[in-house]
Length: 129
Image 1 (cartoon, helix red, strand yellow):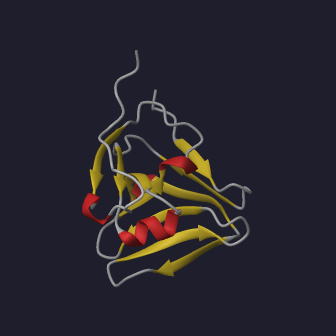
Image 2: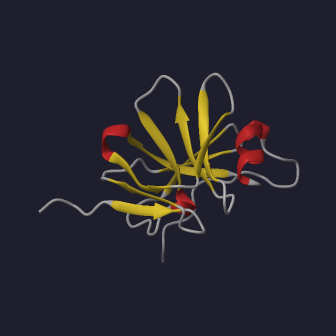
């Protein structure tokens, strides 16, 4: 029996998606673009495009944030959902957009030197008690 796909979407439901496992563990990005995009820190998983499907996309729009990537968001509720590199066959999915994060965990912080001066990037959370 195949594992069930991960599902998720934006706050208002205008964008919905499915991603077939396995998904990459969660990585937190502290770069200036991701902090502006998310309002703090961008935490995301990733999956190859051949295991990703949009099931509702009426309010999805894409923004070319650089020559290297584009970002997908909902035009109705403003949810920041996707980061897609220009020359790779994968898509990063906001961890907070997943309906459930079963089995996923934060494993790494990147671009920590760009973190805002109001916080300190920390490592992954401790294992559950």
